[in-house]
Image (cartoon, rainbow, N blue to C red; front, side):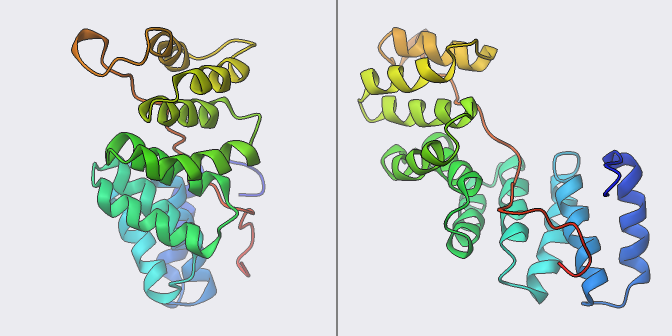
Length: 205
């Protein structure tokens, strides 16, 4: 992992370690944690199983809660995903990625933009250079009627160019953020990484 090999090369080695290590040891936890993190976008159902095994032993593992939230989000289980991110954020309240992903779920998946705003505002302040976070914040602002503020937030984020999703969001804001008909709101881009406050690079972690 320190050599930054691809997930395809690392996952079989982690699976071998998971089978060889004694259950609930640091090595076993390391293997299961990283099997969940590296495999989540390819196989979110299996990643959920690995994350839950870690949490059964270490219920205070914020990263395992976050990857469980991401996996459940990818599976479409949005309420479950939100609860998992809530646990991750409670354990690590200064993590902007957890705040962003939870805020995005509140806004887009659970139709709770007012609850999303403080989370997305905090994430945007902590990661001011992240256009995806700014776009999610702008989306929630527009949904609670603060379209002019949303435009300012997004304009700063995409001043050097934006992705197709971000430009679609800009056009929606320019149109006044309509909510019905053919101009229905676009989905804000989702930051899919369950990022930690710090990397877990050793078995001792």
